[in-house]
Length: 112
Ligand code: AMP
Ligand code: ZN
Image: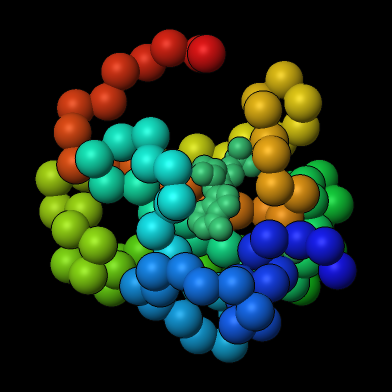
């Protein structure tokens, strides 16, 4: 499949990986939008939260629960912001569900 995150998950594209288990990976974003910018990516390919099966929703819940142990690994002790871009208006560029983890600075709040 021509998906950049699937390629990373399959080991066919390099990435800076901070965490991996059977269900998700956490990598550094190649084009950071904050001092610290990671991507939490469930391994199964689907584009939208609205497409999630019950099983995928449970996986995503478990992935989010991992954040507690990732706090010291990613340096998130001072707080962090999670962002999920969905579709055209949100400028989703990779059609594989991922959660941006932004940290390392005081975050502004602008829609664009
Ligand atoms: P989105 O716009 O929400 O789809 O975000 C996609 C994110 O993936 C962007 O922040 C990109 O910088 C990031 N990205 C794209 N390709 C790579 C890659 N090969 N390694 C790490 N991050 C990537
Ligand atoms: Zn994919």
